[in-house]
Amino acid sequence: MICYFESMSASLDTFNAILCRSCGLKPEDVEPDASLVQDLGVDSIDMMDLLYGLEREYKIHFALGEFEARARKEAAPAVFEVEQVLTPEGLATLRRMLPEVPERLYPAGMIVQQIPLLFTPRVLARLVDEKVAEHQRRQD
Image 1 (cartoon, rainbow, N blue to C red):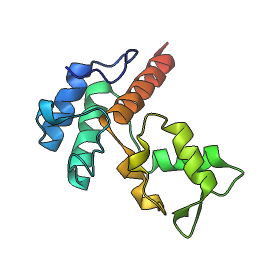
Image 2 (cartoon, rainbow, N blue to C red):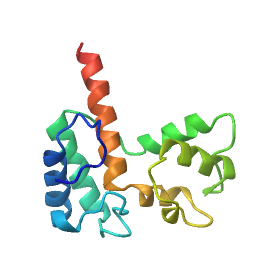
Image 3 (cartoon, helix red, strand yellow):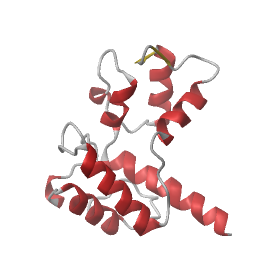
Image 4 (cartoon, one colour):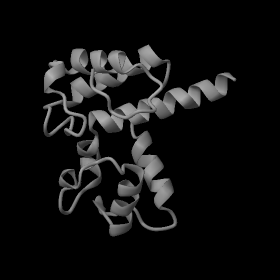
């Protein structure tokens, strides 16, 4: 079992199984800090399948564009992007929101459409954990 971080409340075995099944990956090939897109070859169809599997298993919801919208809100009042190119403030916001993302995954002149390149198994596991915790708080 890959341990992304100590405090995750969602089952890592289940998370890994969904990740591997949805994306056609072998567990031994999945590194916590590998880019899902660049390093592991996850395409948009795989990503949709992965998010759907995580939603079903953990009873959570990932809205398309939710992460970008949250980043824009956190960057305010600074400008997040200009003509789809992230501003220095936009990049700083992403780095604050995703402290676990290796610097090598931030491309020079990053555009908004490249934000998914930052998603790694570690990032996705943390986002699932946050969603699960949020869901549990609402249930209490």
